[in-house]
Length: 168
Image (cartoon, rainbow, N blue to C red; front, top):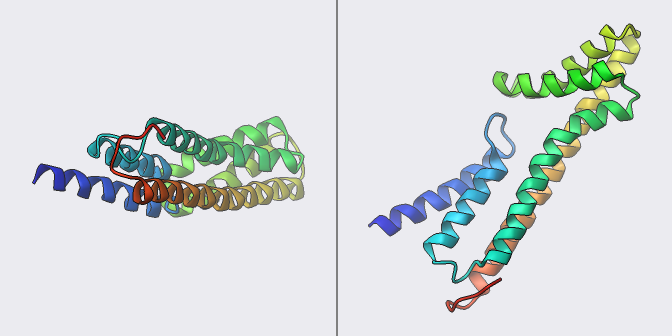
């Protein structure tokens, strides 16, 4: 019974994390990794080895890094000031606490406000805010691609490996 509950938890983490990677406030990709790690542990790492887990962990860190870097790089590409870059980062962080509207509007408002504070025009502030938002859209697409790679790697390794011990 305990083993069944662990498998249910592992699958719930993977599915919930996959869904959460598209919803705000839920750390989707790290939850997917936690579920995969739990599944590997339940199986005593016989199908999913340390090398595969290291690759999955690196992909998880990449996805998290893409999320944090996207807003700042998007604003920077539009020629944002330092205050706008700071505003984009803060807007993203603060937006996490306000669900979907916060995730969508936080980076835009933060970048635009920072640009306005640096005494630029309203047009420049709007351009920086839009560029930040577009970067977040691309980050979401990148996160989805990383998620697909992680799920594919895990499923291929788990389903096609023998039940014997493996290092990969």
